[in-house]
Length: 451
Image 1 (cartoon, rainbow, N blue to C red):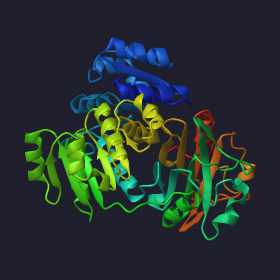
Image 2: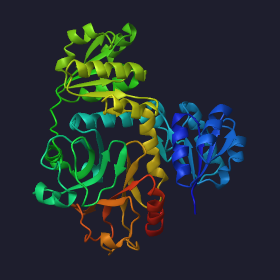
Image 3: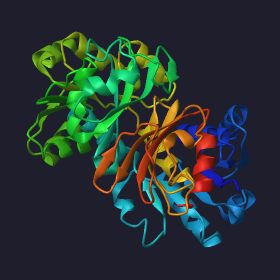
Image 4: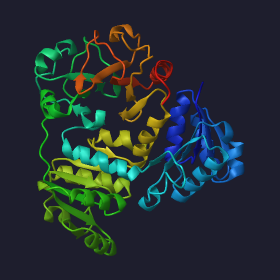
């Protein structure tokens, strides 16, 4: 039986979630005040639309709130999202509610007062992503599973011992630890590889390994991570301030640059160890004066992506070892990669990825998107009555484009071959391309209990 989902808000986040879920043949209804926003969604996705305020009972009734499984409140207004969840809870107490909330003062009330199942704070997700990049600065993409014990790392292949090797021979080259290549992106083409595929220079390779061997694994692909000590953050808005606060608990030397004098005064009062600077991040003379070329990482977090891109390009040209760029518009993400900016963060994309986890059937614990929407990795628990239990992976008959990446059994992590067998209560990670994710989800739905 298909999930029915109401999405309140047809902005960037609502649009992309609706399009993604509709492509997976879920029943989706989108509510928004703007007829233009609804028209855009209808042109790109097979969804129903209801024009009106999502916080109004009559609008929610018109959308079918009584027969709905999940409500997603993802407008740009925290207050509207809260009210929509409150009304939905009164009309259908059994509905699962997820709300996009950015104001930290509201978050403490979401469980007890509003009975919201999950609050999605995109700014918090962005901070987590930046901290992961700082931990492994040579990586293009990082996702964590099994409480951080297993990493899914995207890395641009350089000149390493695995270059030119077919995947069937990688285990011999790796030696003392487990590593499995999950995906290869060559140009714009993503492939879930088989043993006959080989790794080439310039490929973007996604691999899984345990947390202890990430740096060794990256070296095999010709990438070595430098240690981050000096950081320049450009943009003292909410995300910039929150990041600086997080970094003050570390040994890093942090500078925070903002062009607004009043904001700088406020930042200086809020922060203890961070050096607050007033100025324009696109000013080359200022960047030279602040020795941007000696920075291990420059993080551009202003509210304007064009400015962030320019700052990142300047910082790279002046010698900064690594740059992270905030991008708000989804359409810009593939464009900035073509000019060599691979470390990007997006509050809106973070919100989408966080929400998708709760759309999955089966006992799915964690999800992570690869290369935007190209593929998705899901961490699930095998139940006692599951059909996957007791079968070798080669006999599971997973659809083409799906691959089991790892199995965690108690404290042991297994990077499997085709002969590996999943046992009850194992936690396993499965990767699926966008085209096959519906089939994989159906398999999880049939074979695993609904979570």
